[in-house]
Image (cartoon, rainbow, N blue to C red; front, side, top):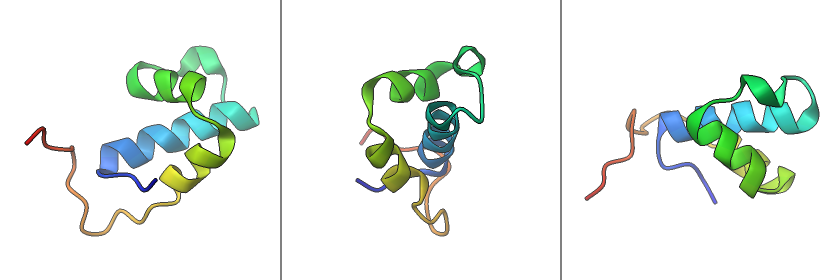
Length: 62
C-alpha cells in the first residue's frame, strides 16, 4: 500500500525506524505512533519506500 502524501510517507519512515530499534518508541507522536502499533514491518516498509515526487504535502479529505 503506497503512501498517498509526503507526510504519510515520513510518518511511516519514523514508525519503521522505531520497529527496527533505530529510534525509541516513546519519541513517536501522532500518526507515526499509531502506525507503529497497528502495522507490520513489511507494511511500513512498503509505505516508507514510496517515492515522494509528485505527492501532495498532506492527503486531502475529498
